[in-house]
Image (cartoon, rainbow, N blue to C red):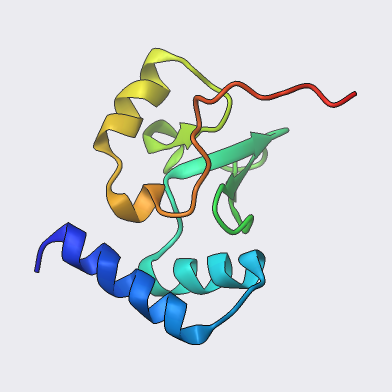
Length: 105
């Protein structure tokens, strides 16, 4: 089964649930296909960019996946190289990590 077929199949199943709460849908997606390698980071903590779950920290311990993730807001060579390795499972329902953020105000 191709990746495209798997993505279409997942989307059909999500549509059948009839949920309107985006956060609940994202939680379900992560439980079905796993957390994304696209992540946010704050003060050494790493979070899934899709569902927001904490995935690790680099404070008192080493976060083993840190060298392989794409950090939202980083437009560095490492993040760009890691993004090219991401699959549809990583990108599904995740923000574009390289999109410019608009300032609130």
